[in-house]
Amino acid sequence: IGTSIDSFGTYEQGFSISKVDKRQGALVTTKHYEDQGVEFNFNQCRKGFMIENEIFFPQSTNTKQNPILLFKINVNTLEIEKILAVPSPDSNNKYGMFLNDFLVIGKESFILTNYSIGELDTPTFKAIQILIKHNMTTNETNIIRFFEFDGRHSMNKMVNFNNNILIYGTIEGELIATGKMAIFYLDQNGNKIWEYQTSGLSAIHSVKDIHPLNSQEVLLASYDSYYDYTNHNLYSRWTVTRYDVVNKKIVWSHHWDEPRNPNIWGTAKIIKTKKEGEYFLMANDYEKNDTASYG
Image (cartoon, rainbow, N blue to C red; front, side, top):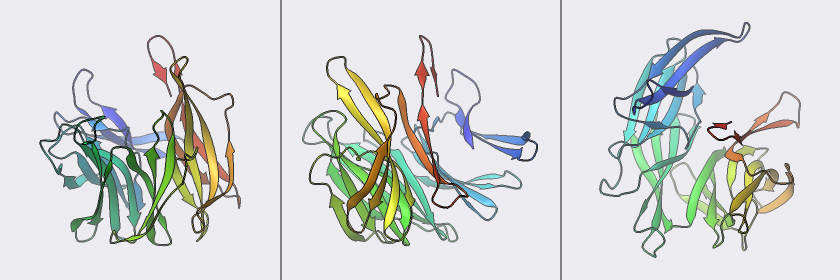
């Protein structure tokens, strides 16, 4: 599944799904989907779940009427069905909604989304984080958790951890590219089991992927950055951390790309290989010239 633009210079940007013969590497077929006049946003979430012969795939859009959508795709026929459209809680709000993450546990799917209210850089500015639960059998949908923070809080990634919902977030620091790690542990009904934040600033505060190792530990892929005020550039590196969720402590942490890279793009994925104890970290980098950027 990937981004798909029907024609340049318009807002008809949707998605396409392709079937590929994995033996021959040959394209079997492609199907394009779009909503007239709606631009889908692929910068928020590229995560879907396959359950039997169906893929459940969320999207965010540039509209305030239904900014969060959930699709169901049949992998045999490539039939695409829109099964959920989440309206904005405040249609008068000047800020849009963002899709942070998507999670499936059994027949329940969970959508983590946020929007902002108030005036930017003032005490009135609030970050509203919403956790939506959708039953894929009955189509029953409920907001099961509603968080209201000051504008420096964000909830970024979530994962199934011992059949509960583990969410890693950030509390932004006063200086650019600094923050605290924040962790939220909820049951499947959105009830808080516990909440934690580091006492001071942490280099591991911008978590981009979570991979559970066992009932106590996870692997984290995080985006560690610092801002150079002398040349006004942001320099970043990728870090992988083994984290003890039970005791709230780092077991070990390792980073790459020193000196730091000014052109890292903020998406990453941890994939387990067939070899026991071995994992791939897949992350984005990009290069720029005078006219374009290349991922």
